[in-house]
Length: 355
Image 1 (cartoon, rainbow, N blue to C red):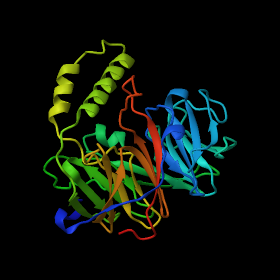
Image 2 (cartoon, rainbow, N blue to C red; image 1 turned 90 degrees about the vertical axis):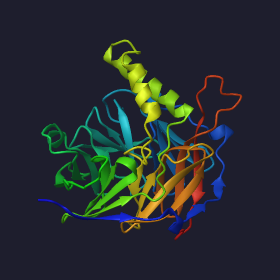
Image 3 (tube, rainbow, N blue to C red; image 1 turned 60 degrees about the vertical axis):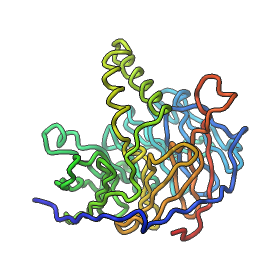
Image 4 (cartoon, helix red, strand yellow; image 1 turned 120 degrees about the vertical axis):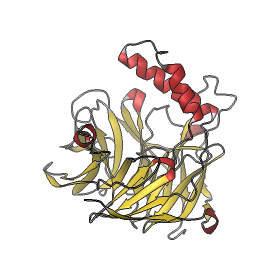
């Protein structure tokens, strides 16, 4: 059945941005270990944040002052070990959940690293929401629908964290959404009902479970080409992909890089860098600018309400109450002889109602 939807366009001039005063400067001693993973989880105390250190296959948790709370995990399949840690989620009781996709499980630990429990994940590509309690909610791409020509769809799963039982399973609305440039490419379920899906050229789809939807062209979207740092990062990703396949790293590289250089960037930073906060607002990390500043756009009731500007090049973020924590790449400096920017965490206080 065709979904009922409405298109909404908003002028950027009717919006506003807010600049936040950084409450803690994370430089020097709180620089993190380099990692390919962009996940960060702000824990329930609002004072501790955890990140994945992909090269060491472990998790590091630090406080606002950069002091280490815990460093834990190693490669393996035993309790507290990881094969491919990919996502982090905040436990309502102060724990952190680490999604192991290759092992198909969520491991729950104290921020010190003490093992608490683990639960089987319902899908090999399960991505959890930013927080969990007795129920863990997440989603994965519906591969069967994609292969069957039914377009991009996702499946929502609600998992009982004690028993591992899937207590709810629902598919995302199928559309079509009448977006000229193409279909949805990712999204997340809302906390209660509905979905927010991201599509091409800055389009967002706020879809209810009944089939009603609002299709919104992000008012702050700008069609920007990738900068030199992004081009270099993409080239290394493609080379690494070829190496993993066992083929020459230059295979098909020239054509792929030319397409990347000449194609405007997505509005969204990645399909993983979006969340619904406790107040029901939708936050999305964007690819706007990303030089001296980066931007998070915020929506409420399917309408844009404002942008948050943070320093440096954003890679990931989490929000809890009035606290925002951002994982960033620092600008390259004289000490970065290897050409790799320092990875760091910044903390911001955003107030109770910044919009």
